[in-house]
Each structure stands twice: as structure tokens, then as C-alpha cells.
Image (cartoon, rainbow, N blue to C red; front, side, top):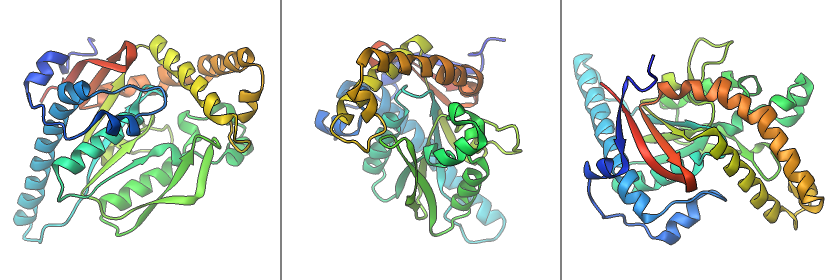
Length: 307
């Protein structure tokens, strides 16, 4: 079966033509502040790719609000404030975080009367101590390394309109969950959930995380390219770690660089690439939109689910 048969494909120029506005209201400086270490994004990217994408999200969100109102009228109830949840998935190092932050900023600018919040599922990894206790430290990032029950409960509480819902956070500097620094989500109109596992179904659960999503996006790229970005990011993490002994990457920044990169390449081949092939890439077909990236983190194609 053709994996793209359920999608319409558009090149960058065609996609831009659906909403050909140049009113970005952002500077390159703004973009540099939100991009991840080795990611790349430009004003042209915003014009060609992300403003049409935001317009599409706006249309879907408006339909969502109208349906909530129609359903409340039918049931003869007052309209409840139900958050619209957007999921963003893809491999490590593919640039999900940058895209999530950009979409959050653009939605805030284009929907100034709505509360838009952003969170990552990294915080729902089991802490390193628990991963070691379970003997799966070398499986960090695989489905079994996440507390999926807690993540599903979090999403359920958000969708139910609970006034204050707390999500654990994750620090890439210390390479561990920060249980003492939770992210507080307080009844957003739109919540963006970003992570490698947002479209996955764990083997011990009956629910997909994406069952709570109203719209989803997958960031795609050739695995060889992603490996290049992964190693490039690792090098930049070493450059930022050598003055901070508390940083997870500090020992690697002080040691032999060739050995450090050999270790990083081994982790990619042994952990991240198998995880991508077995558990992340197969979820791509669950997304409403697929952004395909090529060399230099440039989006060259977009796929929109039919229907």
C-alpha cells in the first residue's frame, strides 16, 4: 500500500500560494531566539510554510469551536471551554521543538484573545533512577521508558478543563526529569503537545495519546539527515557544556572529542535509529499534516490528509 495514498502532496511554492501573505510580524532575531541549537529557520520559511499552516489551523480551530457550540445547543447545555490540543511528533533532532515554539508564537499573534500554551512529553519519561531500577536506561526514549499512564491522565485532565494541571519537565542539560520544576497548565484555549511519542500506542494501554488531539503534525526527514543533525547538535552541546560541571555533557566536553563523537554515533545507531524505525516512523500516517525536511532543515514538501 502506498503510504501517501491518504495524503495530498504540495511543494513549497504551491503551499505558499494558498495563503500568500508576507505579513510575518516577526524578525530574524525573534526566530533565532526560538530555534534549537543546530536548527535553522528564516523569515522566508515563515512566509512560505508556516503562515499557510497557521491559517489552516485557524480554520480547523474555528470548526472546532462551532461544533462545541452546536453540540451544546443540541444537548441544551451551556458551552464549555474545551481546549483544542495540537500534537507534534517526529524523531529526535528533527526540529520538532523549534516548530512547536514557532507555531505557539504565531498562534498567539494571530489569535491574541486566546491562551496558547506549549509542553513537551519529555517530562513524562521515567526519572533516570527509575530507568536504572527497571534495567532500561539504554532504552530511554522507547515507549516503555515513558510513564504513559501519567501522560494520559494529564491530557485527560486538560481536556476536562481542570483549572490547574501540572506536567513534569525535562532538562537536556542534566539529562533527567525535573520533578521539582513542574509546568503549570491553566485552562488554555489551545495546547501544543510536542514529543517523539505523541502519535504512539503503547502496548499496555488502550488509548493513543493522539486520541486527545484535535489536530496533529509529523516532522519527517531522511534518517541519514537526522543522524547528521543529531551529531551536529551533540557537538554544539559539548561547546556549551565545558564550563558547567553539572551539565550531563561536561565529561564528554573535557575528554577526547573523537571518542565523544564515537559514543554519540553508537547511541544513535543502537538507540535512536531503532526507536525511529520501530516506533516513531510508523506513526507518521496518523498525522493530519506531514512536514518533510531536506538538507539544512529546509521544508521542501507538505502532505495534507485527505478528507
